[in-house]
Amino acid sequence: MKLLEGKTALITGANRGIGKAIAIRFAEHGANIAFTDIAYNDDSKELEKQLAGLGVKGKGYASDASSFTGSEELIALVLENFQSIQVLVNNAGITRDTLLLRMSETDWDAVITVNLKSVFNLTKAIQKHLLSQRQGSIINMSSVVGLSGNAGQSNYAASKAGILGFTKSIAMELGSRNIRVNAIAPGFIETEMTAKIPEEYRKSWVDKIPLKRPGSPADVADVSVFLASDLSAYVTGQVISVCGGMHT
Image (cartoon, rainbow, N blue to C red; front, side, top):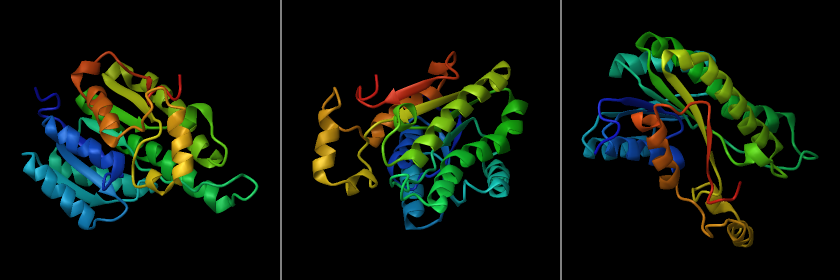
């Protein structure tokens, strides 16, 4: 059964990793996909081909989610191409990890702007459209680090914790119009980003996970399908940790 048949989803930061996995899983469930990354490149073209092979409409856009005006322009363009949007996945994000002692203002501002302000930008830009159709699901990608903190990631943790407060607040604002807003907090997920972590650190983290394995982007994508679909029609303002029990 295709859970997202007839829906269009906009996914930011989807050229690779978790965003790409969500785009493919949504397409497998019948959704048309608009996706973004900071640049439209060969990765974007490859994903478009994969989506077309799944029998849905898929189109990539170069867009800076941290730009307020750029986000407004993106929503207008996606609506012109797809006519409607039922699901927004705010997934764009970066890291600039270092101890506070060494962290520059630039490191702080970049992470807060890309990770947190982007969620405000896209949600603000799509709000009128979702209100007019009186339905929608917004999924914000946070992190278990936003729940528990992590040494050397104060900027990242602050941005991801901010997403949680934003999610709960906007769920209260938009709930009466049948617009649901939820967050996912991934744990240690195998992506291009985590592949750069030295093996000894990777092993020590995995040893702390009750399920004794890292997660995959597909694990996050499957939860995203639930939140995007009508199966979660009575779920809003919630945070679902996809972490193998790392954060309990």
